[in-house]
Length: 411
Image (cartoon, rainbow, N blue to C red):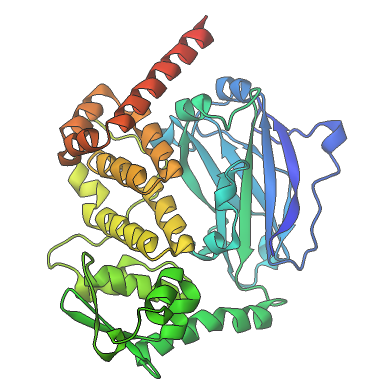
C-alpha cells in the first residue's frame, strides 16, 4: 500500500526551495524501507513564480524517502527548455549520493494534481513504464505536464496555489524483492495459462480468429461474462464457438490479456493481428497537447494506436471491466490530437465518460485558430455534432465562460 512520504510547501520566486518556518520539519514522514509512497508538493504564489522564474529555472521539494532512496520533485513554472516554454514541467530527481548507487534504481512514478483522485489507485502505477535512475541519469519527468493557460483556467489552481502529488513505486528494492516477486508472478502465471490453453473450456470466434479461454476466469473478472457463461440461457451455447460480432480480433485478444494478467496490454503485443502497413508506434503522452501550426498530424498522432485504444475502451465497457475502461480512458485523454478529438468526444458522450469529455474540451480550448479549423474539417467532427448536438452546446458555453473569466482577470 502506498505510504505518505511527506509534504513540501514552496513559495517560489527564486531558483531554490523555500520552506516556511512552520513547515520546515514535516517533510520526513515515511519508513525508509517502504517500496511505494507519495509526496505532495504545494506551490504557493504561482503567479509570482511564473513572473520571476525564467524558462529553465525551477523550484523544488524538500528531500523525502521512498523505497530506501532519497528523492526530490523539480517544478519548472515556465518549462524546462524552450520546446515546452508554455507548459509546467515536472521532474523526479533521485537524490542519493553517487557513491551509494551501486546499481540503477528501477522505479515507476506518476505526477497528478491532488484532486485527481481517479489517478491514485495502485493499479495505475503498476501499469506505468519502469524508469531506470542511475549515476548517469538521475532524473525523469514530464516536460509538458500541463499548459499554463489551461492550468490557470482549471479548478486545480485555487487562491494562486496548486498541489502536485508524485507517486513512486521502487521495483528492485532488496528489502521487498522476495515479497514483490511472489505477487508479480500471479499475473504472469495466469497469462501463461491463457497462452497454453490448459484446461480451457470455452471458445470464441472473433473476425475469423479462434480464442480458447476458461469460463471461471472470465466470470470472476466480468459480470457480463458471468451472465453469459453461467446464466440461465447458457444451455447449448457451450457446444460450439461463441461468436463475437462488431469487434476486431486484436482487440478481443487484448481484452483477454488484461482479464488474465491484470496489466494494461500494449498494442505491440498484438502485431500479428494488425493490418499490414499501419503505424504501430506508441503515442507520446502529452496532456493537453498543443498542435504546432503546419504540423503534419498524421505523422505525429499515430492514428492506428488511438483507434486501437478507442476500440479497446468500447470492449471494456461492453464487458463491464471497469479497471481496463478507466485505463483506456486515461490514455485516450493523454493522446488527444487534431484528427482524433472529435471521435474521442463522441466516444465520451456515448459511454458517459465525463473525464474524457473534459480532456477533449481542454485540448480544444488551447488550440490556435488554424488548428481549430483542422479540427472542424476532420472526418469525425460533422458526425459528432450531428449525432450529439448537446456536446457542441456544452463546448460553446465553456468557451464563453472562459472568455468572461479572462476579461475579469485583465480588469
